[in-house]
Length: 295
Image 1: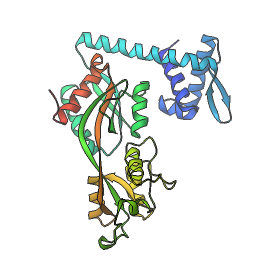
Image 2 (image 1 turned 90 degrees about the vertical axis):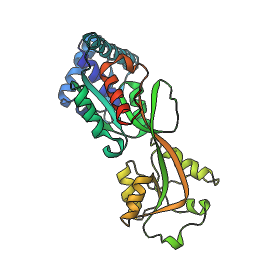
Image 3 (image 1 turned 60 degrees about the horizontal axis):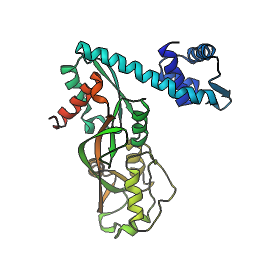
Image 4 (image 1 turned 90 degrees about the horizontal axis):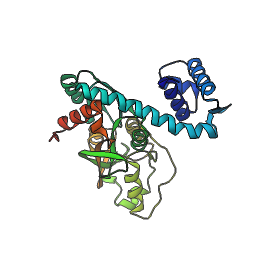
């Protein structure tokens, strides 16, 4: 049994699809299929049911998935321990991101790592905040930038980097002398929502609940770029980071509604055992240094 076979098993379980799993482990679908068959033959059980809709775990597969994840974690811990004994921080760190690289100061983090820990490679994966946090918990990511209001999260270390102001952005057809006069009137407009896994979704739901309304079903944007484009095209109002909204307003593509402002936090999250992993510790220290939070 090989570690790469277990990684393939975990990837297929997560994706439910051979093609997407192959992309995730950087190989081909036939290679993924062959690795699964070899693993099933060695274990003597069928791990997946293969259907027209994709790959679904069998009962045996469900039980063995957790063991495979623990084995991978143990392997990574062993490698990290050996690196720590050698006094080196090296290897790839998978980091989730939720926003544009400039606002996250990712370029500065890369420079810090290159100068202090040249053997550490940072691999970025963009996603929604809640999905990204879940991926860190499952070990699919090593750490992440997220938008999050909570100072503590179960099973994760949370480092608050900077507060983020959130504003309501109206489509450009709204004139300054004809803006909604109240929060209630604002919620009566068409809105572009965000998925439940997005860090701004809670802000949006709170805004609507404050006037006794439920968020209606309507258009949805799953990236900041999509939100900007949909608001600018006139589909509806939307929540944005204040810096992005003000830039859109300067371009004449929207108008900030002045009667409401929310706040969340840009956070770095990682496993609580990050100090035991030299490469991850190097990334953590670089992030804190860039944001002026190093001890």
